[in-house]
Amino acid sequence: MSLAEELAAVYGTPLYVYDLDEVAAARRALFDALPEEFGVFYAFKANPHPEIARTLREDDARACGAEISSTGELTAALTAGYRGAEILYTGPGKTTAEVAAAIGQGVRKFSVESLSDLRRVGSVAVGRGVVVDCLLRVNSASASATTSIRMTGTPSQFGIDSETLAELAPRLTSVPGTRIAGAHLFPLSNAKDEESLIAEFRHTIEVAARVQRDVGCAFRFLDIGGGFAMPYAVPGERPGYGKLRAELTAALDVHFPDRRANGLRVFCESGRYLVGGCGELVASVVNVKESRGRKFVILDAGINTFGGMSGLGRLLPVAVRPREGAEPGDTESASLVGPLCTPGDLLGREISLPRLASGDLVTIPNAGAYGVTASLLMFLGRPAPTEVAVRGGEVVSVSRLEHHRVHGEVR
Ligand SMILES: *Cc1c(COP(=O)(O)O)cnc(C)c1O
Image (cartoon, rainbow, N blue to C red; front, top):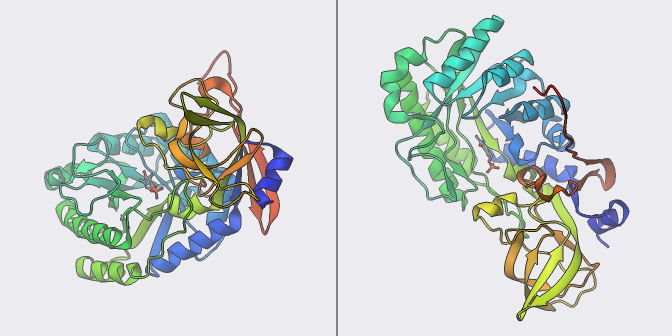
């Protein structure tokens, strides 16, 4: 039995198992792939589990900062030991209350997505008697590599259109309570290979230099986004990025030659690369049935537990590992579905599966990112899956998220 299966026998299913040693290894791999001078922000939305977040912060020299976008993620970051100064607050819909909560906890770096967003952050900062560093999130008019999720170049709720920056500059740089510290670009997620990742970063760095010229002040922070890839729910390894470090340094030398003198700090962001590989989801087969010649394998884990995004038509090519002792090649075509009362609860349509029977365990690999919190947790009212964190083969944490209704005065 694998460790995950052993743990499922103890804690039941559906069960997420996170290997914290793998989180630490991914963090080291990412820092190794980047120039020495780089910092990394961990995108909490990938997985806000406190042990995972703590593991990303535990190395003094190569600790990730926290990239958060809600008060829930703020709490998650603080719980994991992050201090306000290590946090970057982002998002297109920051409310006054959220910004106040973040500033109250010592957050002093905000990515702002419009002049009005900047002014909102500024007015809260003024009320608190502080000045905060703002990174202008930029929606570049031009794009480079082809990517799985495109976020720039088109009309978007994200970022300030790059072609408007020069004209906006006097207003952007004179908002009380704020200081324009630099730019934030995030044009790409899950790059298909190292070449496209490098092409995107080169382009981003060039755009950032133009933004600096348009805004007319020397940057102290530059966040060039991410795109570091990771297989999702299918077997596979973290990609290696052997050429990236030299390419990033070269691009920065061209476009930000004075960065050391100016004290510029450069950051990347990642969610899936850092934590995708640390997690497996173990589920039980509840039932196997046939309908009109097609087979359905019904699990106790559906889109309430994993891959809630598949409801957006982004069906995952889920793979499950055969149970121990199954004949290799003993597979059949079947649909892998969850227990919810909706035909949308589909993890895989007519995919190749090991021959499964009621009571069997299946394991979905590379499920550490966009698992629990990217699922439709509340839909149909099933309990959230149990989450176990393991370090050195030993269980260090067992927990389960719980929702409950609060009556009366709710704020
Ligand atoms: C979601 C997100 C990330 C993380 O993306 P991954 O593909 O998981 O690395 C990073 N930065 C921002 C601004 C994001 O919205």
